[in-house]
Image (cartoon, rainbow, N blue to C red; front, side, top):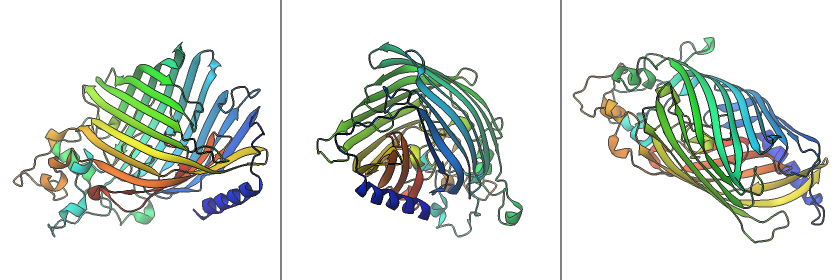
Length: 442
């Protein structure tokens, strides 16, 4: 965190001395490399160490700021146990009139947090304070999770700004009780967990409790008028498609509408931009297995993982994957203000801030019939009754949060991001949320 702040201040100071003249045309050619140590932090996973970066090929510069080819990679570990390995490729020019987006990912999280189904309806231990005999262990929300994923998405040209899109994703999941290191062998109790309680009541079924395979395919349309992909100044970006698994027999409908407005307040570093996203995804046929309920399918991956409602990808300010449901709608609104732009080491930089507001609501709960609310129901293995785990009256509550971020962008594509947020929906508020990573959210 200190390194990030020091880097920010150094670049800001350099920018005051090295502001790009207005008459200079910003163009990059050939190869460009953005490599950083993974000295980051987020509330869910702790401090991250390792390395990540992007490799760009701009050719003769005629497509700048969009690259001809982009390769992203990461190899890192978090202090709360998670390990991530990632390699991706993205290009609109490899095949004429087509876009190719491919990646392979491995994530090992021996201390993954599982918060239950249907967000606000899934009560946490703060709701049990009236029952003095109920005391959750430190890892009541803990389990282990491994993910292996291969992804290939393609888009083809139909008319100006309109593309067809299709994709294929294969997943392998491995779930289990929280895996402890030797130094923590006396700290955790694997018998007293929400993961075990959900299995006992049938909310997590026997044939999916240990994980499994999924083969998802998607097909739809993309309408895109953005001037720049990584951080647009103007334009519309809309995805509408179906996503499902023909073997698991479920189908989702997904719609994402994003709009970017240039605000004509002529700051030397660039005009401010108001950006917003309206999104909805819902299972419209069949039922998604437990190990895929957190997936948020996207046609182009901007970050390594796209899942769950909460954390950096959807509703900032609440915990990662805090809301798991069959259907969910959400909105993100933010103002992007460039403070200063400058040239340093033959690279073009700008520094920006982005105050934002996020909100979302469940449109279709997941396995709500598994939860009974009668106090006469049998007690779960951890000693809790269903009315201590779930409150169906909260399913439709609107969750909302707000905060702000700081961005450092190189060549308008490689964006280092730091954001803080606060959840204003009290039942899901766990204090200040912090995330340091890459890219704008959308």
